[in-house]
Image 1 (tube, helix red, strand yellow):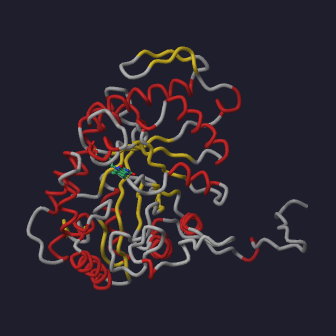
Image 2 (tube, rainbow, N blue to C red):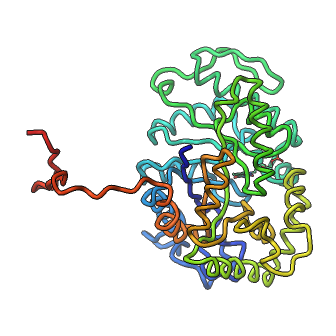
Image 3 (cartoon, rainbow, N blue to C red):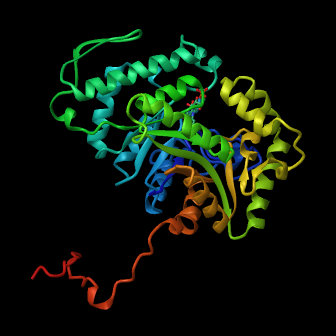
Length: 403
Ligand SMILES: Cc1cc2nc3c(=O)[nH]c(=O)nc-3n(C[C@H](O)[C@H](O)[C@H](O)COP(=O)(O)O)c2cc1C
């Protein structure tokens, strides 16, 4: 199976959850004195956070990542807007945008997605989310409870696919109806976005079974990952999609020259988290999580923890970020070789998209790009002398055999 790697764009600052970390960037920094140039001073021509995000996106592309995940954090920047700004600064990078259907109308989302595809050369991927806690969603005007949000999202995607594939689409559902709308002309030629979704509740799995091209999981224990994949595949069979649906995982990485160096970095994150009180805060926040997220938090973080080493789920799989309150919660920790072995172990479970990053994003994208990703690529053959492409003056490259 071909593995593709995706980085992540930090839309809510850099390592903002760890106040002791002096590498914070962006306006979310709790230590203004430690701010970097990524925070605008408001002067004309000054660099701002979007310039940093642009740097991260370019780094991901340069280092061979196929795309980047843009999460929708409660008080972070909006993914679609940011990716639209970055589409023209990148060439191939795919934007996996967190997309909450309840915040849009199906037609508006269809039209926006078609336009995005046109301006980006078809690089939009939707990660259909249902947002964080019920409380937060209610605060922002969401009227529906958890399970109904999924029922509505399934209808929403029925409509998007209907509008995309028909000039005149009719639909009568519980939440939406349509009487003859649909994409026409050049917009209808654009490719529909690849659809991802996550979540382990009934509703989440049903949505993935019917509509998702990729079902995304967290790198919790391999047994849980395998069980969720098998369950979603079985549900997808109802729609004749058991062989079509594919699987991805979001996981952080602390990869270093040796295991010892990687463990030292995990320990630093944990100790700073304890000192800053974020370990306790994550446990308190878990009370407001969805049922399945709370259950997972308790499964891996609910026991007595005296140090970073108590948070290994199994060798080289660390649940410490979840304990500190940093999503996605789990990380592969170890030497470059052992992190690559962990990726292979999870790939063998049926996962082909790996959303892999670390903190700070920019530096870790280079580290992963230089030390981990090449282990999954066929070696580049050095050009033999008789194959060398001669440079011609004027900056062009002469193609061999053209006269
Ligand atoms: C890879 C991945 C990315 C996610 N991104 C977001 C996000 O950007 N914003 C968000 O509110 N939730 C995000 N989620 C959370 C899911 O949308 C969902 O709320 C969560 O998995 C719980 O779903 P459940 O309660 O249906 O099991 C993400 C989950 C995964 C696995």
